[in-house]
Amino acid sequence: MRAIEITAFGGPEAMQLTETADPVPGPDEVLIEVDSAGINHRDTLILDDVYPPARGVLPLPLVPGSEVVGRTPEGRRVLAMTQLLGGYAERVVAHESMVHEIPEGISDGQALAIGVQGMTAWHLLHTAARVTPGESVAVSAAAGGLGSFVVQLAQEMGAGRVIGVASSEEKRKLALALGADAAVDSDPQGLTERLIEANDGKLVDVVLDATGGETFDAALEAVAPFGRLVVYGVASGIPPQPVEVLGRLVSTSRSIVGFTLGSAMTRRDMYRDKLELLFAMTLDGRLEPQCGGVYQLSEAGRAHEDLRARRSHGKLVLDVSGWSA
Image (cartoon, rainbow, N blue to C red; front, side):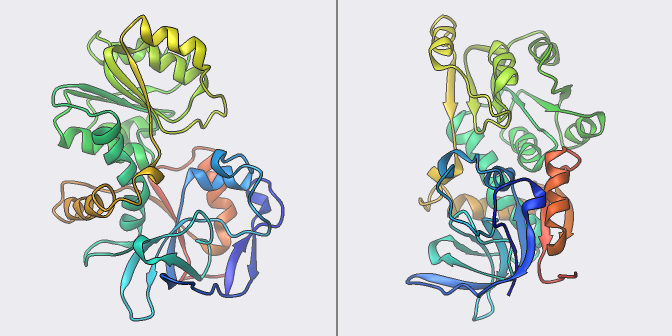
């Protein structure tokens, strides 16, 4: 089968289109003929061997990608999550508990967007931040695959004011079009002041951050007493300093909450049931997953370059069934 493979860690240039052996399903696993594969920021960290849960332990060669839409041997169209790797290929195996039938009317891109970004957004708001009606919410990368879900879901659940944080005017306009009440520049310099100004001069109840570094510091200063800063990534590569941060929390009655979707995926009530809910919301028009670009399998490197350079918005997808050299 054709697959994207890396034999040495590096950037997008490390990915090569190659022929490799078909995967063989083990006990309780399903073989899936892949139509489309999703691209996540986590994939770029894996290529650089800096993804925290797997740093220094991933065997080479490897095939990136952890989510696909495809067909089972009996013809069911499904969304499937792999064990971190294997998705950028014509065939994958996935545990049967991670294989979910897709309702008619949901496109490949929509299903892939919902499977990771949509589910993460839902849990960031409901499970981690526990947003209540009327509270203000700010989200980083508001035009991205995940942030665009947060903007819509926060409005759906009755947030008082939704603030999108994005790196360009075009992306801020998209956040506003999706329902954000305000949108501000993501530059960490002056971010605290911009968030407060966008919230009508008040500190923000909930800030969702996946950047870390200076952005984390600026976001924390914008959080109101008894508010929550939810951390779901450290894209800057600079984690918070726990001792210094603890003093800032105690003195201001604020909380920092961490979240990763992997903690929820093994529980039906937290994953499968919520996945069905987001499919239903998409079908009835309450939710609009943002599909930011479709690339051929051979263009995986270019897709990663666009993602790293922040030239994209929404969910990026590899068209595997429509492969061309």
